Length: 261
Image 1 (cartoon, rainbow, N blue to C red):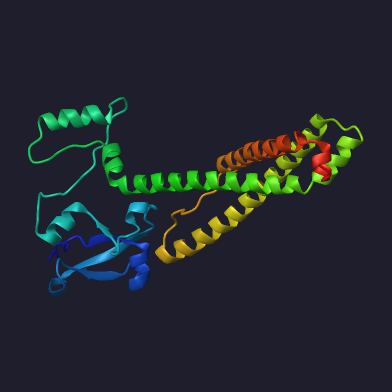
Image 2 (cartoon, rainbow, N blue to C red; image 1 turned 180 degrees about the horizontal axis):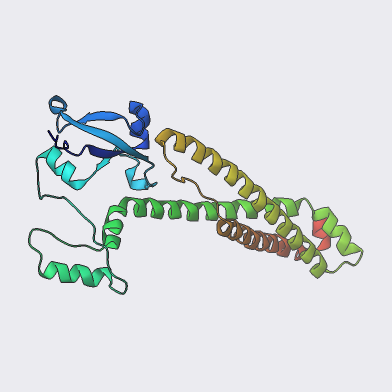
């Protein structure tokens, strides 16, 4: 008597966080069902995968199980029904033209380019990005004012030195250049120190939130472009503040700087 083979076992892939929470490994057998009281279908864990880091998924509380579409349809008792699926395009075919062609004959569905869906789902992050830009602009303005005040105070401390140099014949151009050079050095050193502090703060932020959300997503990123931009911006602001403070100093008569007038 020949025994016919039984039905093909359902194979599933578990998200790593779910597998760790349930203490499951590849090859384990679990029960599946559309409701807690209907866990009758057996399934074998065929794979454990790490989901792609996605900011839109951070607030998602549940974990995902992947399975073949026929098995999912049989489990939900909903054959020939899907919520969303993707279509691969041949080389040279644009997503916009393919979506337009499909929508001309659409019946019960609507085609959208993946870029449009991604843009729609990332509106919240665009708002957050604009908010961060506004904070950055306010911070730059405040730091420029603070840097100008620091340079004015520092130059005021050099009043006696500038007066002596003027008395011994040092030209105002030389004094002006020395003060501007000093301001540039202070600005560059300050920007390098600030970049180091930002890198440490970013590393601490990534370490905490990666552990908190159990993800490989990068929350704080310090790139060479950002460092270069910060150094150049700091240098420009330092030169402007130093030049303004030095111009104010060299235009003051030596006797006034000495405190005799």
